Amino acid sequence: MPAQTARSASTRGKPAEGGSEFRVEASSRKLNLSTGESVAFISTLSTEGREILTMKDSRGAVVRTILDSVRGPGTYTDTWDGLGSDRLRLPDAQYFWVASFDSGSTTSVIDTTDVR
Image 1 (cartoon, rainbow, N blue to C red):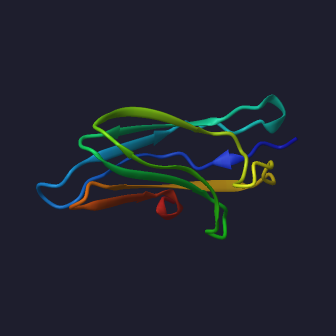
Image 2 (image 1 turned 120 degrees about the vertical axis):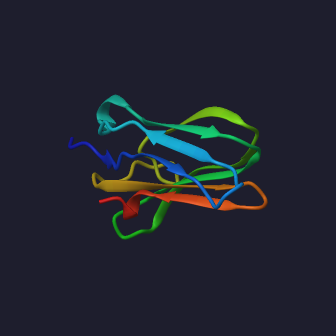
């Protein structure tokens, strides 16, 4: 079975002067669905806030929300296993991730559909 691709990026979302900072890194490997591999996302937050992590298909449609939670400062690991919101395997294709962080005063977004 062909592998699924989750576009990889290591990037920071940094708002205007005085705002909070967050960083999200994704592993760059392709998913081999037959072996149950996953893509790991490591988020580093400098302050408490709401973090949202979603997966999109090539048309920009959200196929799964991996995380929508308030978190304190620290480093967190989340994974995507190639399943959609309905918990069924998605077709072999390229997928992108979007991470957002809202500290209450500032919102930052990292959208890998814009990374070419």
